[in-house]
Image (cartoon, rainbow, N blue to C red; front, side, top):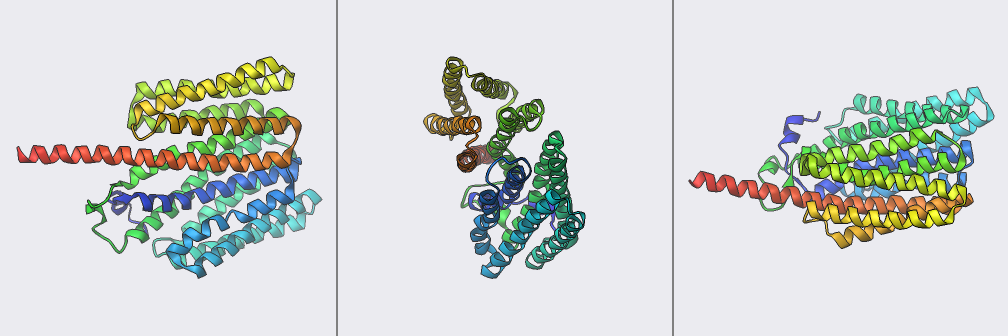
Length: 393
């Protein structure tokens, strides 16, 4: 079992943090591409075969990292078990669309057995994992997937958003449990980890804070897409999607406050609200065919990116303004292209752009993680120097 008190004493290095982040990211990416695939099956948004192929490849993106920790045999079995999970989802969607009740029941049973196999497999490789706990977490995960599929099937798209929201929250719970076990395994051979001074490190709790901040970019892309689907296709609850998009920035800013304070983060929150408002206005202008308004709003989006880059670089010396501006410009450009493909119903290119947006989100998240890691480490270093001076006195 995981010793929480021991985890709180850990000194997590940057390389260890990245390994743990990859484990946590896997679940969010799997959940998001599952939702995207289900949209293609039930609502015809995107090429179902192409999206299934991409969903099928998601576990492969993480096997190289896992191979470094557990070996080749583990990574291959991991890949097979999660691809079995994905195939079951495809078969369940097919059965539901066909109205085959018996096949639906059989696939639900298959999902349950697959969860058993994954839990037993993971627990066999890590003494800090409990098989029953993992199975419980996977059962809840699968139920949210089933809820999403059922809501798609009945056309209750507000419930689709609700199930996806709960699914994302649950991926944080899964990721937290698995990353705790992984952290314990990585450091189990080094009980003096918390006394390391040869390299920069942060606490486990600080690492979780960084992950939540890093994750903002991924959720921003995912919820912006949900909003676009509702506005451009009429499928879903546009107002609910927009509220969830604003909640994403509110959660993000709340997580920044412990590091940078209330006053400055409130200013940043207003900049993010403005970005979301401009996105909503641009969708309206496009749907109305108002090219003049669309052009003006586009310029304002880039101006907003300038302001955000300037603001962020002012609160953390490890976030460089030009680098931030370039990243925000690229994200804005990709978002504009995504909007255009929705408007033209060019779903093949739309999927490629969404992939690019998630890749950009991951890259920017990494950049923010590095900057926050350095910011925290520097602050810790200053605190240690002050304590040493006080002791000498």
